[in-house]
Length: 351
Image (cartoon, rainbow, N blue to C red):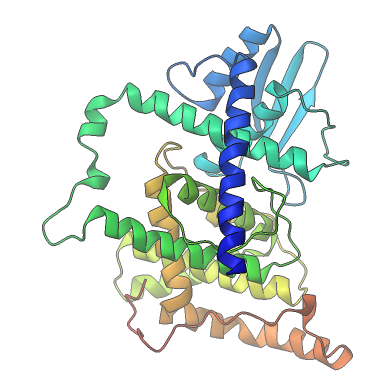
């Protein structure tokens, strides 16, 4: 009973925290998002309302740095955001820094004195600002909302609610795999409490899970390899998979091998991940959830991913054996997670 009671308590606490932050954002007189409903345009409007320019710059930030940095100058605030971020993660990162500005948080550019409570508050405020932005964008696209293709049920297709539930389950599995594979990484979340796997219910939690998955993938970026990505993509094309399935297999194989490389303390390679180079509509959380769900299924079920892992095992196994001789405890104190294909589906299309 303690587990469900704790989760229920956290949910009530989050509801109260959202209510308090919503009131503070209203009191900060944040202007409504202007057309074309992008974070860049909104930052300009916020800067004009405050009488102090607020500008966004896309720059190359290494995975050892935060995805976004706030630089305060005499008459202008600049938000530096990692140019490799997908559109959805970029919007969240910019809004996180905007929250620091409108809530008048203190702090320096390199986050040397990070207060977890302040960062959690800014992340929760960013969630609220993102919902405000998407509502404004949706309100001006009534025709598009009425003909939302993602919600149309095609002949023979599963109901939209069931498809969402399946994608939510796959997202949860991917989130758990990344958390278990990188237990030493502290991701910025909306709470300072220890993260626990919770069944995804509704668009708000789906959005939060997608954001935290992207944050974990960014941390993993130095160990991702374009060679692994290209090799897995070729393997998938030989089995005549469609473009979406090829991408899912290639991304899943890249993540699986990167997790092993990081776990065995192999040195990171070039800081350039193919997983973070795609651009999607920042307002379409459902589409991004579907893409990540396909990658999650390939990660845990596809024999093509398992074959690509097996091809890289000798390198990883050699390092692991050498480490085991000097220290019988696995690196990080956590065994390597098995991501091979499960026996229940060994077909190449298990993505």
